[in-house]
Amino acid sequence: MKSTTRSLQLLLAAALTLAIAANAQTAAPGSKAPQPQTFRVGLKSIAIPSPSSNLTEIGSDYRVMLETLAPATNRLVAAFDRPEDLNQILTGGAAPLPQYALVEVPRRAEFLDVDPATFKTVADSVAKEFGANLEGDMKKSQDELNNKLKELDSASPTISLDKPVPLGTLFSKPDAAAFGMLESVASTGPATKMCAGIVFLRAQNRILFLYLYRTYKDESTVQWIRTTSEQWADAVLAANKQ
Image (cartoon, rainbow, N blue to C red; front, side, top):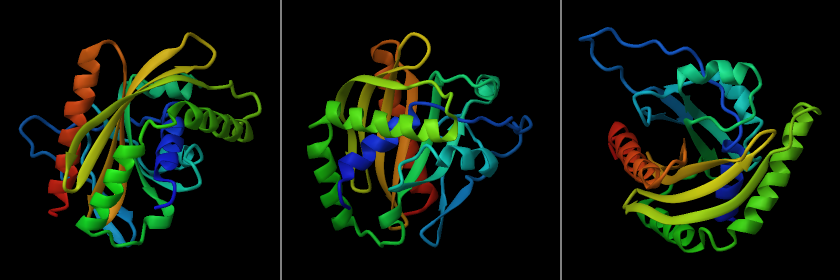
């Protein structure tokens, strides 16, 4: 896949701004846990469980609104958000949400069968290149993001992405690898430091990007991102029985 690292950075920039939440329907006490929802990716139905019990997939209506924030090289597949953040979104808040997750697929690779050997080659390349030119990549991503937001609404506030800090590889497995990052995000108010887990995953021979975000407080936030990202990756792989 051409310019894999660039695609990761563009996705991250889009993800650090807005997300749309929907009211969640919780299961009745004692009822069985619902089966993971499936999403179409490259002619396949991919099961994608929620990364956390407090995150709900927002549904196709709101997901369409998020698609405009993704780079043209990728397609949004699923988005998870906390139901209690709905009011913040509907009132037009531009600050990053406290916790959310996105799943995307590279458009050029969506219909390609990716075998384990090819996945390992690409994952190793991403691990080597990730963070090599993070500052410059984020500046380009910031400019692209703001241009898209202005196209949607000329009065949209400018988003500033600053001080990116790569956290290195969070974990590496035969069909999944994850990388961590800290990023300062600002709009009309004070900057917010966000922690991100970026998972590169192969499910049913298709490549997916899984992104998990949480407001950074201290080292425990990084540990949460590391643990939850790995658990999420394991759940996706198990749900698709690779």
